[in-house]
Image (cartoon, rainbow, N blue to C red; front, side, top):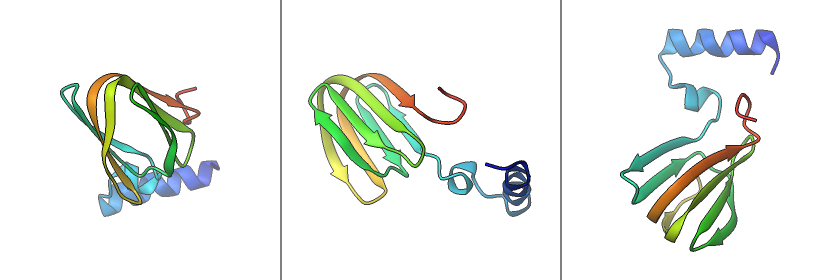
Amino acid sequence: MTRISRKLRRWTSEVLDLPQDVLYDMPRLTLIGSKQLYIENHRGVIHFTPDRIVLALSQGQLEIKGSALVIRNILPDEVAVEGTILDIHMNGVEGNE
């Protein structure tokens, strides 16, 4: 992303009071205890087993590890995961490599 583009997005976020996840197409994660995880702004399921789920993001992947994991609900841009969630890791995301 160019320097001007970053400044424009920052300015737009401040002036219009928009959340950064919307402007930067970043995932929004909501973790409830260690039993439920809601992920918004995903790009699809890459891998699914009861102990590991990998989701595609606009930049990289989101890996969820645990036990007895199930996808309770899946929509075009939102996924609800239930089970015992032990680890959440983002790969290939700017600033987190």
